[in-house]
Image (tube, rainbow, N blue to C red; front, side):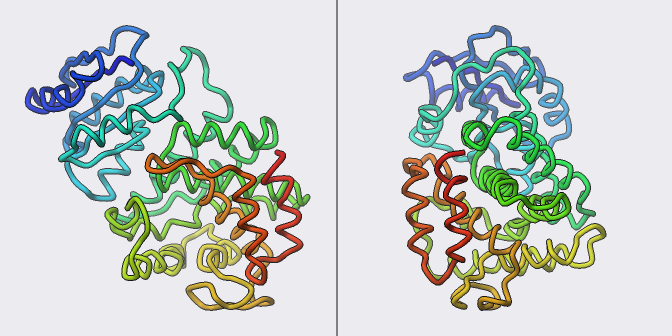
Length: 349
């Protein structure tokens, strides 16, 4: 594997390169003079302060070359939601917060789920849809943090592209594309949107109900923009206080979207209640059975399944068969008829 390092200072260039030199052949250059020559780069490590406008401008200028490189790891200086959003908006496949040690960086570079060199040709509709979806999610998270207007039409349009991609290329292709090119919360939201769209298509939902469903899926975790990254991206099991904090995200998302032009009552309902269970054991409102709408029931199944099959660097990806068995075991919490109907989506599509 060949690795190219780009940094905004000589000190960062040296530090990042020193983490890699003993393991991989490394080339490097400063961001202001970066040309990314050659077609044999397997990974790029970018160490730059994303608060500096000139750095962002330079990275945008080289976006066409960066997107051909399968692994694009950004080393960012601030553990803030905005810094991570900016990194992914600029094309990151991974974002690590400094100080980064050698073990962390090599683990990301050695990820076996990463693809080979991306061909220098137009991206597939699935890749375009995933990029549009990730950009929309990044924009909505950024809007929540800055208090600016949320681009509802943009999210709906991205959701539509995902649904079209699913209908044309199938769910399996979508899962592969998303898990290869996206991480963390963005990966999860894209997986949920694809699964929900495919589930809706298999159920024969009307056009308006499909639009509500994939829009709800795009927005369902917007409340996580208010959860600290240390909790949201923690590898392994959460403790009780961290779990309680995570469980605030549906209500936080609902509050963010309330009064937003273009957000229907059905979408608000789904954002607030996608963690509710038929037996009343869910959150935040402990709803039961008839109080839970069909769109919420569909989204909840898609959300759980997506969480189970996500690709994470710290553990193996769960097989779809095993994930579906877990859904089947949630007797009383999920609607059995819908879980049965989800079987084809889970195992065959």
